[in-house]
Image (cartoon, rainbow over all chains, first blue to last red; front, side, top):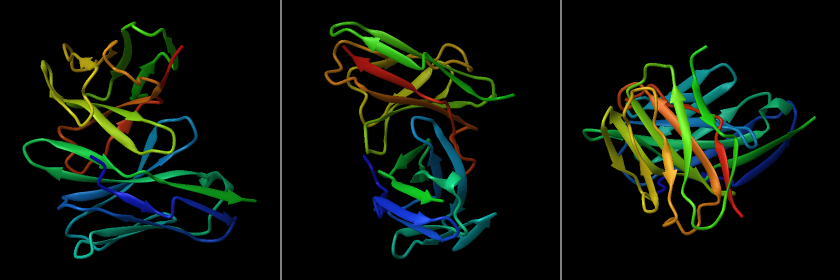
Length: 112
Length: 114
């Protein structure tokens, strides 16, 4: 079952602008992860935030997590054309085993 | 370099045929996963394996089968029972159960029924 729902489905911006993508989920989690997928390729792990964390940074990426609202946001600052890709959030819950449940993704287009 | 290798990149299947997608990793990861991705959709879990000789069904296992005879390999067979197999298939691996380390993905196999 797909738990995460990203918003917006598509986002088009100019180089240098910031891009914000949101993710909502339904059940308890141990952590939430963001992945990037270039067209026709595999996914690349970007950043992970644990359920007891509220904010995390990695380079131009900033992730927030609000467990009371079951939502997360990914901010990409100073976007570049190379950031053009689809971005997925995925939730992980440990219960003797662990799998990731993915949302449908946000397609980001950064124009030069 | 360590990573996951999926082959072939493109695969064409006639209706009624079984086909097997290969997934090999040299990351020494315990857990391996198969996901299916349809256009404009997220990833849906087909099967996963936490250790050798053990695997569990995911959300959409019907029409698929797997084996895990070696730690490095987790092949997926798409059987004739899978009614709509045309999709992009992604294999992933992680340190035991992921548990906060993230997954490493292969570059995918695009399967088309002809």
